[in-house]
Image (cartoon, rainbow, N blue to C red; front, side, top):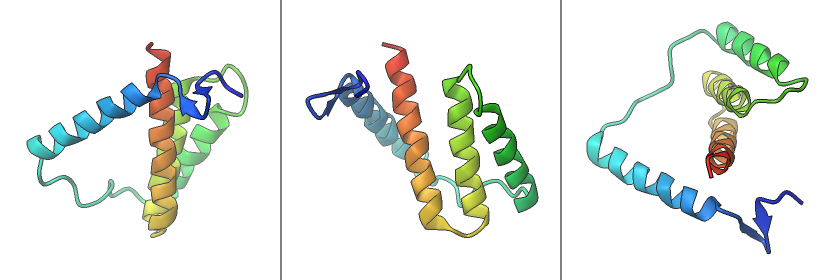
Length: 106
């Protein structure tokens, strides 16, 4: 089991989640009206970018930022396909990768 898990708790992630929630509160205060949608690129272009991101992550060395971009590309493709449930799942993966990246900063 990865070191990030200790006794069914996330090692160091609690503070990162708290930090994210603080930033979210500030974002709501600063920008009460967020965005209405994702970029207006074509689905073909989004799928291409997703394939490129996946290809970069097929072999070592693996980089956290590339994994983050792959998950984001998958979320954008799902959004453009109209699959909001899948989009939310991919965005949850974006958040999970971001939290793991924050752990690299500790």
